[in-house]
Length: 309
Ligand SMILES: Nc1ncnc2c1ncn2[C@@H]1O[C@H](COP(=O)(O)OP(=O)(O)OP(=O)(O)O)[C@@H](O)[C@H]1O
Image (tube, rainbow, N blue to C red; front, top):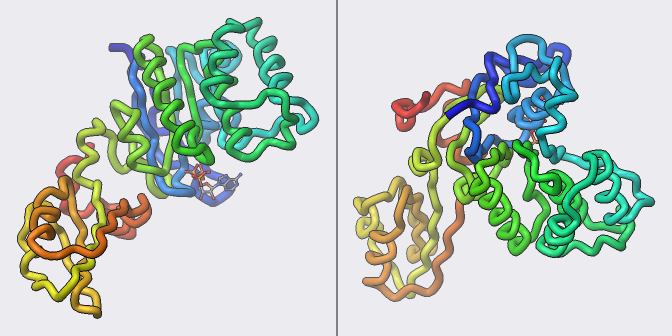
């Protein structure tokens, strides 16, 4: 395999504020690579450096063997880029904007463009200013995909999309992958990256904390399950179950809150021994996961230090 993106000790400071520090990773041609981190971690900064919209203070970044700064014109020909925020002429319709991008790329396959518009469920006759943020995102996604680029660089592509559009987007990413093309996408949502990516880099406070396969993420994945029973249940019934990290009994004496790593099977089976009124489950935000797993200075806590690469 050959690397299509090679980032080595890339550093960007904004005055004396940190942007990113010593970020290094490689993305192989043909993989879907996730760039995961909470708000303000440095995802957009890294992507803007790759797109030569910002200049690094030190370090290097190459795309398809070309230095991103010196080769930026050539690189733009092989990349489909979705910025974090799209500022486009508010008076143009979606269709006109896509036509404009098509011309910039020297013409695109109109049948494929129509198919993308239909799949994203976009009305191209509306003016950009009338679009909701989700529809603006769709325009951005379509323009990034429509010329079938060798590499897609997508900054939080699904933010603002409803679940149906998100699923369609995931299918589009899989098609790109099946074509042997490469996708680099940023996200702050663990499950989203899990759905689409082969490998993931996690960035926090401007520094990479780990790079690994999606399977390795399972040890930072937690779910919080809250179960309310019809009557009081002993907390001991849940303490030693497989996957249970923490159990708390709420003050009503019949609601149990559990942090569970991996499968919830043992918890569900234990709960089923009693009369259950309600059961809810949610995944904590990446910020919460990081608070739990990484100490304030960014040093990995011992639970995960063995897999930090
Ligand atoms: N133009 C700027 N001037 C000063 N500081 C900036 C600038 N742009 C970004 N930063 C700072 O750099 C850090 C990284 O920001 P960045 O936008 O890259 O993060 P992000 O991971 O993309 O976050 P988000 O998901 O919120 O977009 C933050 O601390 C941010 O405040």
